[in-house]
Image 1 (cartoon, rainbow, N blue to C red):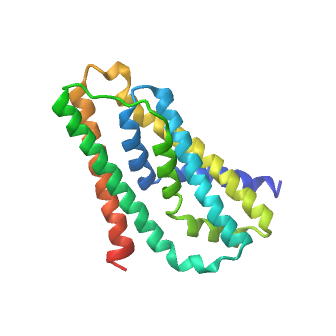
Image 2: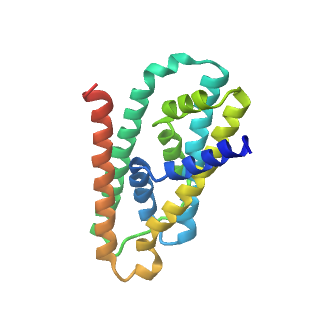
Image 3: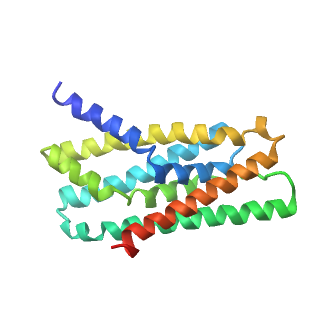
Length: 208
């Protein structure tokens, strides 16, 4: 019972972690290019896997490798995530207006999920230091700490899977007869991505 509770807690924290604002604006922007639920869900899964990979790698360095030198750089890593959000939103804006110029209907892109995985990898940098320090303060033992981070990662994959699926619904084929609405939602998502990215950069660099 004493072992099961921390693991259950890790899964719950990981699931809820996926619904933080910076994560949601990123995944909502990514899935605007999908018109099938299954592709959007896969984006969510790949985002979660990329995010978990970074969290686990940093946890390995700090918990097992005692790489305490990383502690002074987490603010810059957060800022990097902000720049990524700005770039992601700007690129989607570019694609949106390019499509509008060529055709009144939005074009959907069913290529692989490398973008989602890459965004997840970078996104894992945000808050990774605080997450690892929390684990170190609550759990004794290196292996137990790493298992906690793995369970946390699985929880975040599940959370992002759900979030990506929900955000993709306005862009499904059933809504294809409302291109103006889809384009407006894409524009709003891109603006939120850029705006939140600017806020992250400001908080971690300009106001430091």
